[in-house]
Length: 137
Image (tube, rainbow, N blue to C red):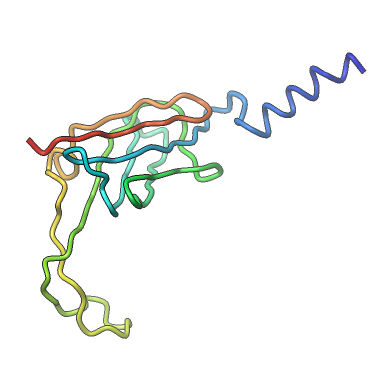
């Protein structure tokens, strides 16, 4: 029985956290000027070409990239998009969809956090919590 404990512990570790295989889960919050971003998308792009990109929706200021859709450990650039409706309707660019007009949106996130991002994150194997408390100024 005593010899089975290390084997059981090792198996449990492998099932729960990936046990050193480099995979990570990422979750956290996104706020702009102290307020949760209600909806949007967060993207993680690896600093090197060895790893793949990943992204997740932001809902009520929270996001999560769980296993098996996880990233590998390492350094990543981060970009965040937050489209907000302008109140205008525009022609739907997708002709096979039933809606002829859709809500026009504009990007509410400052460029320094999306198209000209200055954000980055480093992930270790296992579960990572990365919160972004951003300011527009």
